[in-house]
Length: 163
Image (cartoon, rainbow, N blue to C red; front, side, top):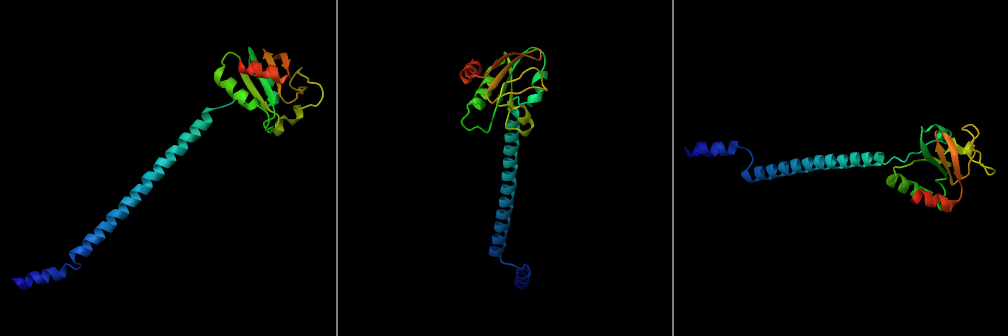
């Protein structure tokens, strides 16, 4: 009988301590793989949420040629150069669009290549979209698709956008 037990024990192969070590290594590897996939899942959800947040803030930026066809009623269109690092217009636009719902504000970035043909160093022309010529930091007030007011004084623009 003792012979059979010795024979069976020698048939098992690896000693019990080696088996325990292998089991611990396999379990640890499975835990590490599980943590890796859990981490990538969480990080991918954060990335998706950031994209949604970025898209949720939409500053109503239009092309200069679209200024006259933004609908009926009153609205403002501000023409500014976003590449001007000393300009405070960008923050004023953001603030106005977040806080004011009375009169809609659209912005036109004159540094955009599509808007270059509307920039002038001379007189401002606001008759229609085809002849439109503006300078940076110009605010036009429209009513039913027609310009009713032209404002170029930065202090006056600031007062209107801060109100």
